[in-house]
Amino acid sequence: SAPAAAAPGDNYVVDDALTSSRTRWFDEARFGMFIHFGPYAMYRGQYNNCREVEWIKRQCNIPWSDYEAKAAAFNPTAFDANAVVQLAKQAGQKYIVITSKHHDGFAMWPTAVNRWNIRDHSGFNRDILRELKTAATANGIKLGFYYSIWDWHDPDFTGNFPAYITKMKAQLQELVTAYDPAVLWFDGEWTESNPTNPWSAQNGEDLERYVRGIAPQTIINNRVGKRRAIDGDFGTPEQALAGSPPSIQLNESCITINNTWGYAAWDTNFKSPTTMVRDLATLTSNGANLLLNIGPTDTGAVTTGQADGLRGIGTWMATNATAIHGAGHTGLVTQPSWGRVTRKGNKLYLIVNNWAGTLHLTQRSPFTVTGARMIGSSSPVTVRAAGDGYDFLPSGAATNTIATVIEADIVPTA
Ligand code: FHN
Image (cartoon, rainbow, N blue to C red):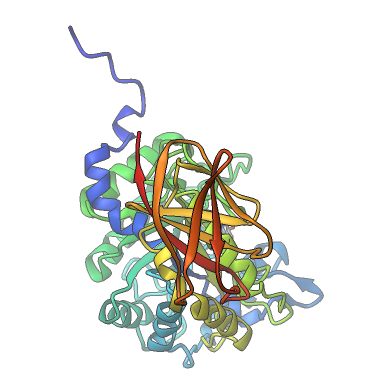
């Protein structure tokens, strides 16, 4: 019989087999670093009495003359790609996504498309995207770029949209050719209610097709288009924990280490390593990634507060990363009140936040536990069938104040 007619958008439902080989590294990574960095950092979160960050131009009604003057003085000599990459690596992050262009339209690489970029406008004679790429590659970390579709600076965005799209594609071509990004992370497609943003569903389809054509291996987020469930390769819940499957195939929650994306001197509300590790465990147990954001200062430095948070996560990861990297959702158990359970092959990882009391696991599908042990300790763990599943009885105390991990060998029996 004749195949069913393709519904609009069907060609954007990515083939599973293709997806699994192309996107496998992303699905195994689980943890990445997001970096919001641009000339908005020059305001350090404040313009007169107005507090804003990467939106400061628009929300604080800064005249372009002022913003352009600030951007001309942008001179982030303290940006140290190696230090950033080491921080990410130490935290157990497998990829970095940095803003190549935010809504202010400012290119963080020496684009030939316009002069509104870090070399021609600011005279900063280094290519920090290149430096990051080099440092990341040397350390086995992937580099991707955030790119804002919405552009406040280019008059063609509102004046001559086809001309704007041509320039946008030319910039994306530059990024792909020069840096071979592992991820293109689009944003700013969402202002549907904003009449100054004419981005349509068709524009999204067209851009996705264009990027696939020039960068077939590159992973694209769903904000390339307006139909978030089917555009791109992965979903992007923001400041929220992605839920458990089934949903769209891949998900990545982007969450800030404090309250803001770019640098604001007043925002020192850093999340604790405990909160972030537990969020990472929850996301891993849901089969989703965490893209944890930092915002370097106007000079390009990573603040102590941000670095300390990442190091705190790294201390936990140094022992327990096996419960995160390559691990994911398990349909075998009900997530317990005392923590989260992830699965990698025939191992379950019980990430125990609350060690006191019985560690009971409720089975949803049959499996047998053939052995269990604490990670980072030689204390044995006894397992016994109990009620609707298993009880785990560790012989020692918790080894970690954030979460202690028990690894269990399992044989699924269904
Ligand atoms: O407006 C941006 C915001 O500045 C930031 O880049 C976040 C990151 O996901 N995205 C937008 C809001 O959805």
